[in-house]
Length: 107
Image (cartoon, rainbow, N blue to C red; front, side, top):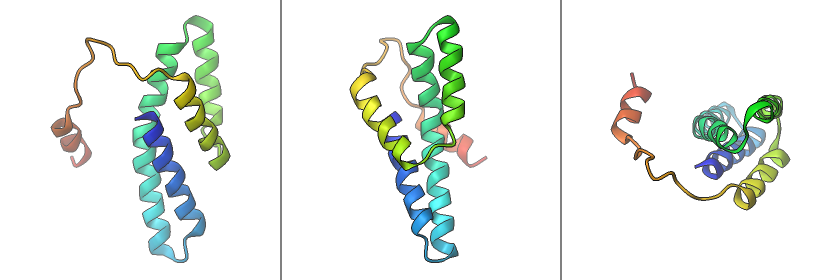
């Protein structure tokens, strides 16, 4: 999900940058919102699971500062996530509540 969120956000950023009119720009901005909604909680979860103590505070601070990054940063984040973030799930992790997510999204 982390890589998917970064990818959606990066592609939407390109759409915004290349937008020939207001409609394309608005579509790109909507895509950025979707990508950010996927990206933000997942990136914080990875930081929380990876770092402990003061290192966690520094990592979250760096994460907040890097939030204003651009497409090269997105590419580096995708590569870094694919290399360094294990694709495992905790045994007691809950399944995605699609119905609840849809209800919250449209309320």
